Length: 210
Image 1: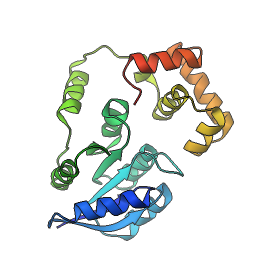
Image 2: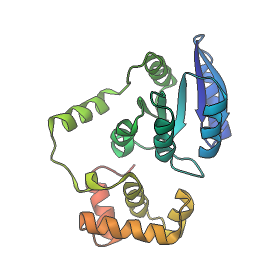
Image 3: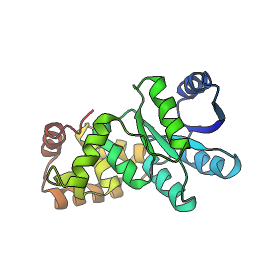
Image 4: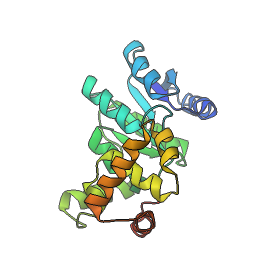
């Protein structure tokens, strides 16, 4: 039996996940969390095998939660569930310690397959992501401007390109507006993209936009 924790801020999605996963006799959902803080607490209190973690939580980034969990519990098995396409965050999540990255529009069978493989201590990647990882290991393609950004800077870049205001980004990432301005300045310094319009163009041209 694979004991699963689900961390997602949408109650209907959690309910749907529980229903679809428990159609598999070898999978049982043993706990749910709706934000990052609850997730960190739940992991300490409930015995489990694999954590399904949404990359977008209301109080902190799923990547930040992942990094804390990996630091506190080396060897923890985490499957990232995301509304964002693989090309945006998958490699960053794998590098941060996730065992799999599954998009929310994937078939339920794919998530079940990912859980089964991860529970065995093996990574699960789609064919597309496997190709991206192979290119990265081989040094192809050439590093891009966004590769030198930190995870938080990368998040801010995508949100700026998506048209969010500094205030909206601060609220979404649960950080201060001065911090958003600081990250924006770092993005400009590291990439040379001097305006929001240039950031939008770069994100779209490089296939980073949903």
